[in-house]
Image (cartoon, rainbow, N blue to C red; front, top):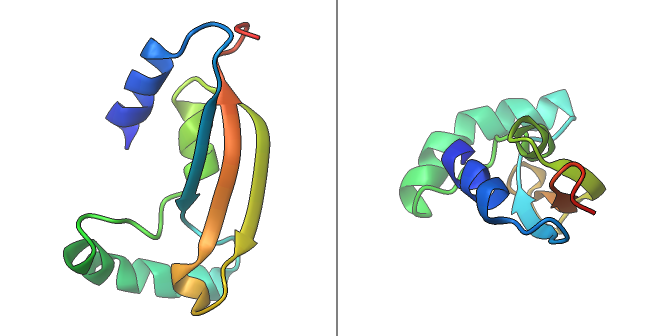
Length: 94
């Protein structure tokens, strides 16, 4: 994911915005423990999909600025449905 985000930052135009929706690591410790346990199986069964990544932190560490970030659980098992729905831009690129 780090390489993908670095490439997004590289090609994003100064006035552009990166819109994303991704499942990732819950702030609820009990849910997060299950996510860490289930992630290896999730990756094998669902083509490399990770359910235990701190998506918001990864976006900002890639040098992008979050302009909107909403988090919520989908219906169903909480370990598989914590969502990051956001928009990021290049700093100084608005």
